[in-house]
Amino acid sequence: MLRQFGLPQAIVQKKRSELAAYASPEALAALDSAQVQQAVARSLEWAGAPGHSNITLADEAYPRTLLEIPDPPALLYAAGRTELLRCPAFAIVGSRNASAQGVRNAESFAKALSDAGLTIVSGLALGIDAAAHRGGLAGSGATIAVLGTGIDIVYPRLNTALAAQIAQGGLLISEFAPGTPPAAQNFPRRNRLISGLAQGCLVVEAALASGSLITARTAADQGREVFAIPGSIHSPLSKGCHALIKLGAKLVESADDILAELGGFRPSGFASTTSEQASTAENGLLRHMGHDPVDVDSLCARAGLSAEQVSSELLRLELDGRITSLPGGLYQRLEKGERR
Image 1: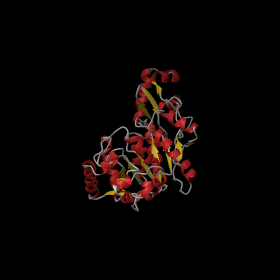
Image 2 (image 1 turned 30 degrees about the vertical axis):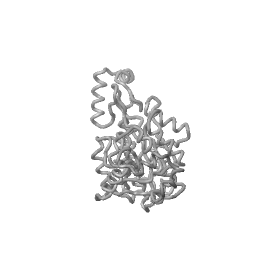
Image 3 (image 1 turned 60 degrees about the horizontal axis):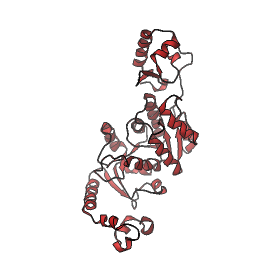
Image 4 (image 1 turned 90 degrees about the vertical axis):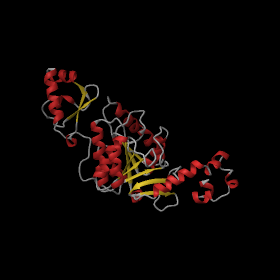
């Protein structure tokens, strides 16, 4: 109907008989249903509150980048700075169960790209998404969170405070009507908006079955640049990134790698990198840890120390912010520039 008649306003002014060739009788009946009328009332009530907006395809504020994708939403619900929808943007996504290093990488990359003039787009999930939003807010730019729920529902609840910060300094958007609860089918659908709003998409950490790969594939289908950070060959969270790189995603080690590829943006001004900055001659247990997760027994064998000595040194390093503990009794060193 949009292709045939143009904007939604033109469609609703047509007689139902004129629309019959383009929609089922059930769909046409729904246009006049009490459920739809109630949804319209809720939407108008939402838009009447301070800082809230309903943005249609006919509005000047509607993001031009979404008009380039095959199925742009007819309506966006927004809370916050709608002018960000017209700014150059970049998507950062990844695992909900991210490693400590992955979270730090996402946040530092996001801040560097934000400082370079890009608005950071992500999906408000735990892990990498949340870190990307924090980095976007910390930089001189801002961030956009694309929700898989109604605009008035924060999911997951753990990100309630972050969502409030984004509504204040960035933008929350959703194509789902107010009151729409979290549903599994909505999150893959919202991923096309995350990539559609952006000039490119960075995957920081992702397992092979991660929803982040859906976003990356959608980005590629939409003609956006896809980037990925490599990781340990032993980490399940690196498998998705490595698969993307094999398929043609650009391997990146710093935010400046992304800025150079996009063009037209100033360098970040500081090293936001995953490469190790410490001297290879560094003494102590770190010298035996390498960069992959490792258990206590392996460290004992490598360093020739007792379990008590290794455990004591691991505790000191963790308190110093040089390493982090992982599930399963594993430990991993943190990059020197990313200490807590």
